[in-house]
Amino acid sequence: MMIKDIINKKRVGKELSRGELEKIFLGYLRGEVPDYQMSALLMAICIQGMSFEETVILTDLFLHSGDILDFSQVSGIKVDKHSTGGVGDKTTLVVVPIVAACSVPVIKMSGRSLGYTGGTIDKLESIPGYQTVLSTEEILQQVEKIGAVMIGQSHDLCPLDKKIYALRDVSGTTDSIALIAASIMSKKIASGADKILIDVKVGSGAFMKTVEEAKQLSELMKIIGKLYGRETETIISNMDTPLGRTVGNALEVEEALFVLEGKEKGPFYELCVELATTMVRMGKNISQEEAFLLVQHSIDSGEAYQKFLEIISHQGGRIKDLSISPHVISYPSPATGVIRKIDALSIAKLSCSLGSGRLTKEDTIDPSVGVYLNKLVGERVEKGEDLLYLYCKDEKIESISFSDIFEII
Ligand code: URA
Image (tube, rainbow, N blue to C red):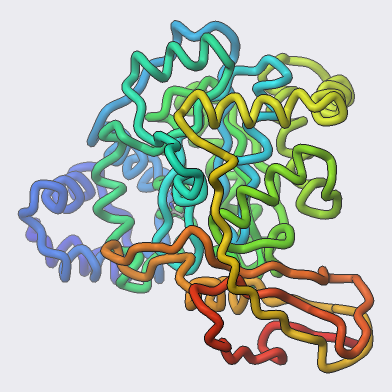
């Protein structure tokens, strides 16, 4: 069958065989299938969907296209976490130290992001000196010594997914439950964790716009995890509003430190506690209640905060040199009332326009800029009170559209 026949078959909603999927996807990896044909297939998949069997075959092709890591020599059950992506999503920075402080080993490999906000690795790199690339030997030594590493994906994990993901990003083909499930699960399985927790985001700032879609994605990922012998759990969490108060790389690191110190509570803190509790329960095979007590103790005693500092200094980071732009512009509220909505996507675009995200792979980001929300959803604001602060490169006033971002009633 020719490549265009495979595309046509999917376009009319028929199921592709393993042979057909291998021909087009592996051909694309080898450079034999051009971008325009792969884009056409991806668009057909977005519109027609994929069967469960097709999704599993695609996961398998992604997984076996590169290295599959084995950390079985690390003692203890290693639990990995992944988020389907959100605005101001700094949960990894808070959750990993908590889980490690509860004696569950974590090897966390994160990505950079392409899109409106930085990925976890961009956030960590805002700490001067922080090394995001470690050899397998260094990873093993650090996990044995301090219980956690937070690094980038330096190994050649799932190169086929990497190539396809870059094409999806520019061809309007990210929104497919099957493609997302195969993409996430192949990377998680290749990363060598024993158990996996996925934070599935739903809302205006997320891939999944409805709870129904988020549930479908969750079920699919759990079944794929089971097929590969990796117990997989999911938490569905809201992404209509940004997570926490900050969007921007160094600002988010600073907020993570505040949360670990117990200085900042609220929905972001609650989500971190829920994720950490679930990971500790999975890693120790204990009840959710027992895990919650361990998590609470690790925060209250300062152990989780100390663990974050330990991970940072072990990887060469100098937290005291974290730099946040001194150029701050404050925006007063045009009205008195209660904040009903803060639009996640609009905040992400605003932060990106200041320089905190990249829209092409070649863009460089400014770690010191971003947005600080002085008021959160549900809070009361008086007319003239500061709603948000922009940390900018200079004092140039950014014009922003309040009505696109805030709803005050
Ligand atoms: N995260 C991924 O790794 N892949 C997707 O397709 C979506 C979110």
